[in-house]
Length: 513
Image (tube, rainbow, N blue to C red; front, side, top):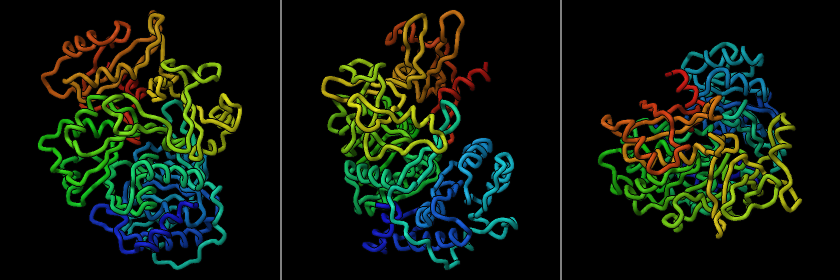
């Protein structure tokens, strides 16, 4: 099924049901279908042809949702980019995928102009929330919605590309992940299935729509007939929870930073979200301390620990019934999916032996845009020699019952004094300390020991000391895994998608010291 068919089907089944709540705006399925149809016609009128790329550079606004479905209806490849990236990051995307159209907010016009100059490529700009301030070489979003133009015919092939989603670039230049309509159809169907999503659900998402985890909140909600309550960020958690209560939120996707903020909020309990039936985490591993805090706050809600990456959206999930027995596991492969841990020779690893996780399923990407070498490295034959697996670059192990446990990125595991160390294992201990709100360990090269291990820490209390944290770590970690220094600060460095970044942590530490 093509992705735009999700919306058309729901608009036919329940046209007046609420599809989207964004700020003070409320759009029904019929509204969203109609507006996206108008915008799709406008895109076609402005020479967007099937297969052309359109870049969407907006916050979590109703216009972003309209533009996503408009691009798909026009047969274009939708390229969502977080407006939190620097001009250099946007310039890379523009020069790499050469979009026909760039849709942005008025407040980002100057920024986008700088990026187009740096990229040497200037697509047509469509400006949202512009008022009267639209450059002469641009078009107002609102004007597009007033046009009546026919859509291209023959958009029926689900092998066509639907999205080009750029990776965070944490291990090099961002790569454009190619997801076909068939890939997205499979991923959204599987996710909706194990979460039990339906038209009874109201999902609150403060995750960027430009981020795979956030994008699928919209796609799954539209597919299943749920209402999506869209927030720009989680900067004001009390206000967001109040709105969630009023809207009757039943689903709440989280990232670890949001979980850490909830854990220290005063006056939060089950009564704040009485209808909440599930929470999810997929962006990064959720420390056991955060899991305990969330379950204490919302004991009636089921918590799904999941593992995913841009190249396949989701790969595994842990049945909430297993959470007490396996709080650090990310579960087993999704339905219709294979997930194996393989050793350095490409053979399936025995239980408890670390190796690389590889994934095969209908939701695995088509490859990387204009990068055949990276595609060939990522998509390769597995142990059975049949088909292709996605080689994730992540180290995992499995237990004797087949449950999977994330260890860390292959390129993050280093040797310190001859011993292999995964900074992620140190993260878990740091996060378990009662005086710590958030923390991340990182390594830098050292001429004597090979690498040096340090940590950035957000303390939960101004009275908490580095000496207390050092004692806590020494009691729970081998000497080689105890950070040499603890740098306290108000927040941790994050990527534009909100992920805590080791690379940025190391750069921040160098700047401070």
